[in-house]
Image (cartoon, rainbow, N blue to C red; front, top):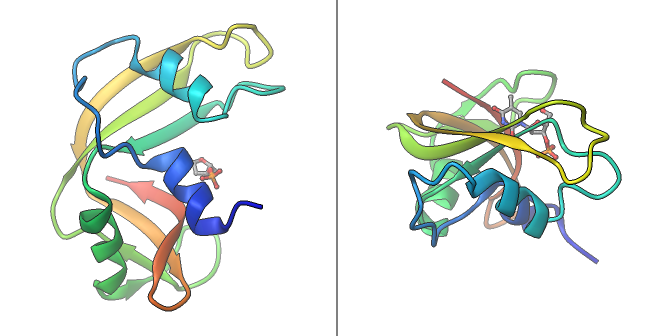
Length: 124
Ligand code: T3P
């Protein structure tokens, strides 16, 4: 079955994205990445950078995570992100999203050795 690191990649990493200005990105990506089964996931961030650049965040200094734990790390510079925000009811089918492109510093939780991102904590 899927590891936490694999789940993070599925939900939050899109290294190959060409479409940083495609407003249908989220409708497509949320579906093919498995976040529209049952209910539509209400909010989700994709990081549009190489997996190596994203994994390297785990080597930055530790910081508190938003809810609990202290295994979070923040990117030193803003990264390309696309945020998917549900439009309408999360029970609607097909799920419809607003696609928001931005550059933000992202905070992720990391686990294991070598440390790998396992949770998307926040961005600013
Ligand atoms: P998951 O744990 O499935 O990756 O915080 C609740 C969920 O929302 C969590 O999902 C992470 C996700 N999330 C984002 O994708 N981007 C954000 O900026 C925030 C705050 C949460």
